[in-house]
Amino acid sequence: MRKVLTIAGSDSSGGAGIQADIKTMIMNGVYAMSAVTALTAQNTTGVTGIMEVTPEFLAQEIDAVFTDIRPDAVKIGMVSSSGLIRTIAEKLRFYEAENIVVDPVMVATSGARLISDEAIDTLKKELLPIATVLTPNIPEAEVLADMKITTKEDMVTAAQKISEAYGCAVLCKGGHNLNDANDLLYYDGCSEWFNGKRIDNPNTHGTGCTLSSAIASNLAKGYDMKEAVRRAKAYISDALAAMLNLGKGSGPMNHAFDLCGRFKESCV
Ligand SMILES: Nc1ncnc2c1ncn2[C@@H]1O[C@H](COP(=O)(O)OP(=O)(O)OP(=O)(O)O)[C@@H](O)[C@H]1O
Ligand SMILES: Cc1ncc(COP(=O)(O)O)c(N)n1
Image (cartoon, rainbow, N blue to C red; front, top):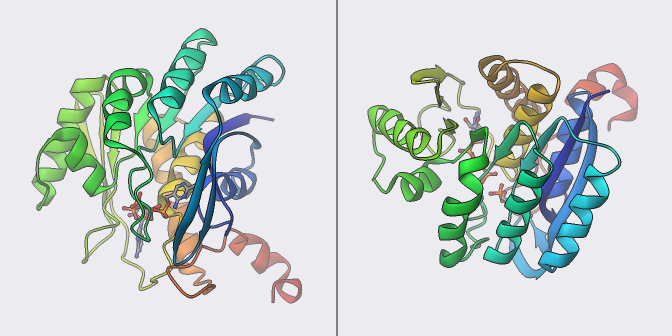
């Protein structure tokens, strides 16, 4: 069985972060492991508290995983401070980790800032250069490419700029566009669109975490970059189309959409 490690924050409401990652990995047929960067007190309406682990403890978590069950892919999500980012970069270099998917989480769907400005600089210097693929949404791509994105052509230019700066594939996610849900992959000097029908579902808490974990799972299973993205895009579309509606704000997705088909009566 292929193994995937998520290095990310915990979301107490289970819609994003480590919880979304583990649900996604299980549904994508890989063994899921976690190194928690922070606890968040969070629900569908907002984040009320963040408690980071120390860099030393995060190092211990990563050591514990790599010295026993070596992951075939690593997904990195919320990492809010420079010390934690440096620790991750140092450990992943030391263990020569493969298939590193970085979701440069900056702001939660609910509007809460999940990283400091200083940490964004460290992210650029230390972590992005070791990534296999980055998955920024449009506001994150604007920060990383240092440009405004208003058109499809801008998405391509930004993805190319980021890819050339950090030597990795870039998937610029179009979930923040109002008319479609088309994502742009810039890989090996070429761009390719992964088009998605916009699903009329306001419950999008954790879509970015889910997509990046699905990509990591598919890379771990040996799919090439394009196929890994194509399958991950299909997964997120199905999870959104299952139309789960929980909580008072932007709710989580239904990762059990497949199981609900198979075990109809037990998924009420
Ligand atoms: N309403 C929607 N219908 C279909 N696909 C969507 C919708 N919203 C987001 N997506 C898809 O979900 C994935 C995540 O995109 P998005 O741009 O929302 O990332 P994000 O902002 O990082 O997510 P998050 O909500 O976790 O912060 C992309 O593949 C995007 O196209
Ligand atoms: C622990 C954690 N990690 C990531 C996100 C981003 O996800 P979203 O933008 O969907 O809220 C989050 N809200 N919480």
